[in-house]
Length: 363
Ligand code: DCP
Ligand code: MG
Ligand code: MN
Image 1: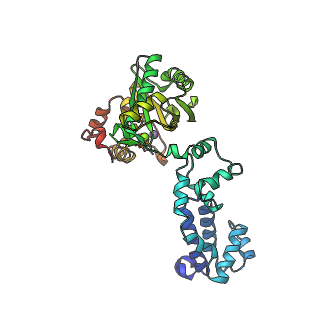
Image 2: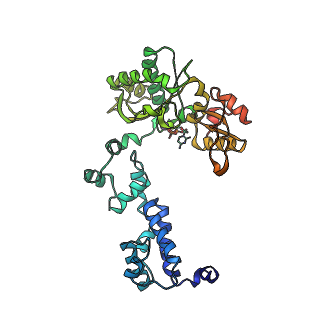
Image 3: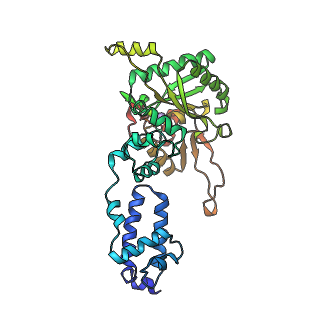
């Protein structure tokens, strides 16, 4: 048709489209999905016009163009540019963005919204906390910002893990607990403590729930657990996803902090530092796959999963499966048959990957 054969430069709105596209690229960059979509739709609409759209009213009468975008179109046509764009192409203040992204439970959309609202520091956010509709977790993230952004020395990760082990075996001597994450990979310091909880004879995460609920209660009573950020969701027990995962914060008891400080040759310890802890409940049957997943790192995991899929298999935190059969339209026909879940080394073997010690899994 005309539009195709004429090429894009023949479109009477090509300059407008070009400016809008720059805006759209900018909003894509800052993860503003809502504006990205609005701009994309407006661009599509403009591409379909055979006449040049010059006024706000004209633009507004077209499908998928709102008031504000219509006004911008008029501005582009009359000035050959857009004031907003000059601002947009200045990247948002990097420092503020980085700071906000380090608040627990704050993602790029929220961080960028705060920036567009003129907020630049944590104190700006705190001052307007009431109007910002913060989640409970974001409040914790703000209140404990320094704590939660302080790395945990390896010895403290070990001490925090040992504390949980002590209480866990008191409840159930059959429980096994491993510290995963960067600690298992040998890191000198970690961002959080990742714990894998399992027990011989269990076949579902649900088997561990009664024990775990008791453990949480004890650890909370003792003042070790100080916040829950994400609890288990019973309807998702045993399913893929966060169903068997608990996220929260803990602190090392004063006594043990003294011990650590003495070992490091430092004097008295001050206030306790809140530490992030993630706990994964894993039945014995999924232990190997969970170990791989929770040891990471994330890039290593991605490459293992990619490799599995290239070999017609699927790897997730629960096991290694035969790839699902897909019928017409890529509809799943079967869930895929479990090949191996329990044994970490076997999963490497079946995938044809030379065994890598956790310390060798940095990517
Ligand atoms: N993981 C993953 N993909 C993600 C997040 C996590 O595969 N998007 C896996 C690999 C990680 C493990 O979970 O190693 C634990 O996640 P953490 O975020 O705790 O990351 P690390 O323990 O590796 O590092 P840190 O020291 O920052 O906690
Ligand atoms: Mg970790
Ligand atoms: Mn973690």
